[in-house]
Image (tube, rainbow, N blue to C red):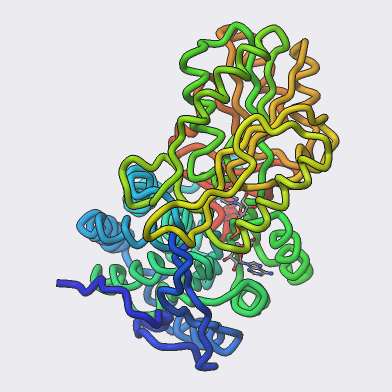
Length: 486
Ligand code: NAD
């Protein structure tokens, strides 16, 4: 039976072997619900990345020509092992991230195995085009693996987003250098054990732990890493693009958001109310797709405000291991301080706090954890910092509008363009709004309904490129056109 115990010192996974960082240096890993240091993670740097690239180079010739059926079988086996160890992975995710355990189970770990299964199957159906030129010639397209690719992921959905990148990269025949967030490294470490057990050949997937500036940038800068798939903040995305663009590295950037929920008076009230609470505060508001600006038609503004605040006050903040806790801890002390600072700025800008606005002390083992009450703010215009900048925490603002044009103007008033939610029973109005709202993903009368085949990504400062379905497999392959004259 595979050992999924978590050692105090996590190790890198390079060339199929587990080892400490070459520098011998480690970073603390903190459980955000208790504030305790629970372990240490490798503080890897360029030397570790060089070693990982060497291992990947050794593995690539064989992996790139491994039969699709075999890749399918190995990726499916990884998915099966994630399911087998579902409970242990969910507890590890919750202890690392602070999110409620029921959420780790319902969303994160389930989606991690779904990702592997989805791309295992996807590669079996992946095909390239041919273009016939009447009686003159025929072109066909080859889609070959790129080579060695880098996958860098954030802390908010740790294993979910890590596997969302790794699975298509491996399915397409690439070798991968992957770095999880240094804030939530544990499930990535456990995934390495699972991949070894599943029979993934040595060096095909290398998981290196460390921070952004040293370890992450060493991946981005490495000449032999030909593509970077990055999910994280717009600030880090900008830095990565500035390094990768001059050397013409293929880039997929999934960045921040400041997502509007647009609520018309003719919406399905009950469904809208429940889903808007969920879209605002799921995972403590730390999902890139969460609604953070709620735009409400003037005629129902007061009714919405009263009902919404009443519902939000019911969200129990508490120990993430308890089933009753609807909200867990904020991921780290640094992020807790950032969110509290944003709330202070909202007050300075003249915002009225309708509920929350404060940190919470949870009794017992979580007394030193990082908890913030779900916060609703009104009386702020579209141009203030609170409504322009991503907070990425349990904080939303309310604004009112009179016409669909005004709603659209407010919705599009930020530099971001990731996701939008539209609530109305008028299907023509909904479709018209969806066509004009500047966001890569728009939900009408729902939120976070995900079909893994759809293109996923943002416009404006929310990113470049799309993940999901064929988009991901296309990203992780190099296209070549071949023309044969008759
Ligand atoms: P972050 O940008 O600080 O870090 C993300 C990852 O990048 C981490 O692994 C980090 O170590 C690494 N990194 C940081 N600087 C780097 C650099 N210069 N070079 C290479 N790697 C670097 O983001 P975070 O705080 O972990 O995550 C929260 C952010 O992620 C939010 O802005 C959120 O909106 C965004 N996000 C976006 C999506 C999406 O699909 N668009 C999904 C989830 C999260």
